[in-house]
Structure formats: structure tokens, C-alpha cells
Length: 632
Image 1 (cartoon, rainbow, N blue to C red):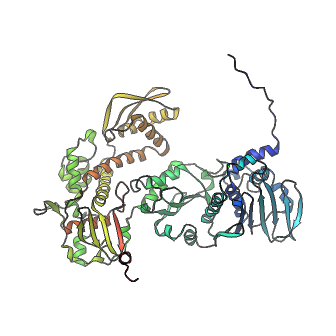
Image 2: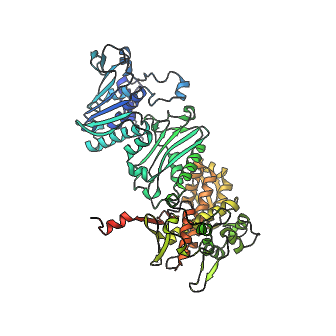
Image 3: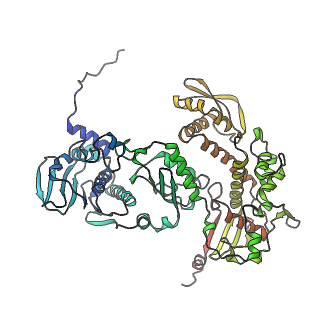
């Protein structure tokens, strides 16, 4: 049966109003979109004070007032025309744009779906001028130097769009959040938001650190780390929330590129990677990151709302952000706690050094890991249980236990009564509680927790979680030192799995064939549209080969081979560390407990285990007093 063709319609040129309404569909999603565009214009005009007034969440009215340079009277009619702007004049300026706005279509798009009036006065002008965007009528008005833009009855010309708006309270929250982002980027400008005649948010001009606290709260500043890094043309500034302050939603993640708030999957991936093995479950980190670089190294003209950017060297940006974030997050909270200096004898006996690792390791750290590794098959030379680690620690090839011994320092002394090795540390009573950040061990609770006393109060340590992190960090260091180029063990599939693939996936599989093999994945090409998986990593026996191949190919295409290989090896080492860590119900001596505390203080990322669970908690004397209602 022949299909009935629709009547042919002639090609015609669209009228200006319809063109603007189509553009408005891209630029104006909700009242917050209008607020963002108008505040962008105010900042580009040099404003030092911006006031936003809203009615009905911005649906009935949006008024943005600024004290900027204003608009000349003869340019007001041009301001509401499509593709009219003062910010770019040619392609060279477009490629180096540094202003918030530049497309020259926001005001015209807004005027096509709402009532728009602009009142503006240049410094030195006798009076202001007001223009009605729909009629084009221009008339004198009273106003101090600066500009006021009034938008009323949003979407009145496209009533179907109003059906997609939420409640007034929800739209107000989005509008306030839009101003909040500007406030973070411009601490030198004061902002105020009014709703229905009531002040709902205000941020006075302040120093950057104070503005950050004013906008996000002192709680965020307290539970975050400063990030600063200059790398070639790239400058990074900001604060990263601590893993224990992670949130259930990604609603406290602010990224700015050259002062513009953006969403960028590449940078978000880099930051999330820096939190690898420090976040529990699907928790989301909180952060504020400002990236500055030459305008010609980033393209901001990739999205109508300017919410996305494209970096010229995306991989370099990814690596720089990831490494800077990792370095900022590496020190544990224990290392930053105040502590008084220990007595010289205690310091000499307990303090770990680069040349002589803490002797607690002979009792706790790698004996278990080495024993576990010795029981497991090690195909294709990985993991580096003997020879590779011997090379890292200076032992002879094939030294086995001797290789682990080189990593962990002095040989263990076995306690016949306890049936466990003990650390060669001094008696626990030789140092006061304030000598070390995590204090002095006093007891073991339920075979699971170590209780310690420090200058702040009581420290509670999950000994398995803490020991797991310590072993993991040492295994990573050993692998990095002696296992470069080693392949992960592979498990051949009895029946190879084929999967439909895109051209990009096939190209990545062919270009990164050796990398995939080093990860335990044997991926080949069957046809122009089909890949075949012949092996998967032995450490992932239950993984779906096709889905695993797809995810690895996607990450290889995005962040490169080195990061994927590192993550895969870290996952394997995390499993080894979990098996090698001291188990619950293992009785520890006080010397072993103290040695564990000292190792935590010397280990990076020691605040969380490999699975993102906390390793220790602090109860201050104030917390304890509150539990017992003391002082009330």
C-alpha cells in the first residue's frame, strides 16, 4: 500500500518575530535564564552593584538594576534588535571573547516572549531614556547613571511554555541560584535579590575568601581544602569539600572558566577521579573551582546559553585538574591536627621517616598482604608480589618475603602470648596524649575499634578500615615504582562475546589495542560495525564482557590510556589491601595500636578506607560534655 504523502509546503523565509521566538526557546528556559542573561549584561557594563527584583518567582516580573556605564540614547533601539552587540566586531574578537555576553540575541529573544522595557543613562547625560521593545517608542525618564531592564509577563506570547514552569517558590530558588553563581565569580560586586518586596538574598562586596563563606556558608569553608595550582597557561583556584562532607546530590558543585559559570563533563570527570576510593557509594563531592586561561585557549561559543565550553587541549586540562585536586585532598585530617612536640626519645623511636618506614609495618601492614598474594595465582607477572616489589625496595629478584620486608622496614618481633607480631615501638606510656595528632591509644573496643586520647578529646579508629587504607597506599607506591608496563591478569572467555559498535568505538579499540590487553581485555574487530571480546580481567569474573568493554572504550576515548590503566590497577590493589588488612576481632597490643595511629598520621588519604568509609572520628571534650549535660 502506498503511503499518502503530506501536502508539499513551499520553503519560505521566517519573519523576525518567529525567529526570535525560536531563539528564545534556546536561550530562555525559565525566569532564571532571563536573570542570568541580564546580570551578565550588567557585569559587562562595569556594574559594582546589581539588584534583582522578582514577582511570582520571576514569571510576572523581573527587574534588574545596575550602576554600570549605561547605554547611549541613540543605541537603545539597536540594543533590542537581533544580533546587535558592542562586545564583538569580528572573528578574531569572537575567538578571544572575555565578556559574559557576546551573541547579541538575548534581549531580542526575551522581547519576543515578554514585555520588555529598558531605562538607561550614561554618566554625564542630562537624563535617562526609556525604550519599549515592542513599540520601539523612546522617551525621557528619570534615573541615576546605569541601566534598568524590566521584563513582565514572561511567556505571554507563547502561553504553552508557561505550562512547563514549576511553582513560584521553585522558580524563585532557581533565580536566586543564578545570582549566587555570579556572586561567587565576582566578589567585588554587591548583589541583592528581592521577591514580592522582601529581601531574600544579599551579598555585599567582599574579599574572595569572605564572599565564599557568605555565599556557601562557613560550614563549607571549614569542611573543605584550598586548591591552588599554576600550570603553564592554566591557573586553578578554589576549594574542594572533604570526602566526609560529600552530599547525596551534586548541588554544591560550582565550576567557573574565566569567570563564567559552566558545566563541563571533562572537568567534572577529573574532579570525580580525584575523589576515587574516598567517597562512599554514590555520594557527591562539593567544590568551587575557578579555571583561568587565555581566552583563545577555550571556546565559549558552543552553546546558546553559554553554559558549555570547549578546551583547546582538553586532555591537559583534565590531567592538571585531577592532579591538583588529588594533591589538595591527599593530606589526612590527622596530619593537620595540632599537636605538641614529643619528647626527643619518643620522637626518635616513633617518628616515621622516608629512609626508615614506621616499624608498625613489620607487625601489621604487609605481612597479611604478602601472605595473601603468595596464595593467589599471579599470571603475566602481576601483581608485583615478589620480583617487582623487590626491585622497588632494593631486594634481590625472587626474594619473595624479602621483597615485602624491604618495603616494610625492620623484621617483626612475635609476641608469644598474643600470637601476633608486635611493632618495635616504645611503651605506650612514654609519651603524653598531646604528643601526636591522633594521641595515645588507651584501649581496643569489641575487637573492632581503637580508642585513643588526644588534646581534643577522644579518637575512635576503625582499625580494619584504617589499616586497609595504609596497606593500599603502600601497594600503590610499590606498583608505581616496580610494575610499570606489567599487564593485569586476564581470564580467556570460553565463548567470545560480540557486540555492535560505533565507528568511534572501533577506532578506539584499534588504536588502544595494547592498552586494552594490559587491562586484561582482548578486544578485536569482526567487521566495520562489530567488536569481539575474547578475555576480561581475572579480577572481574562476574563482569559483563560487552558492557565492560564499552565503558573502558568510552573512558579511553575521553581521558586517555594512562588514567584507565592506573584506575584498573588501583582497583586490583584495593582488593589486595582489603584482603591484607588486619581483621576484626584481632587483639592488638597497645604498642600495635599506637603504631597504627602513627602510620595513619603519615599516610595520605587516611581519613577514608578504599571504599570511602571513614577510618576515624573525633569526639571533643565539648562533645562529651554535651552527652552528659555537663555545664547545663
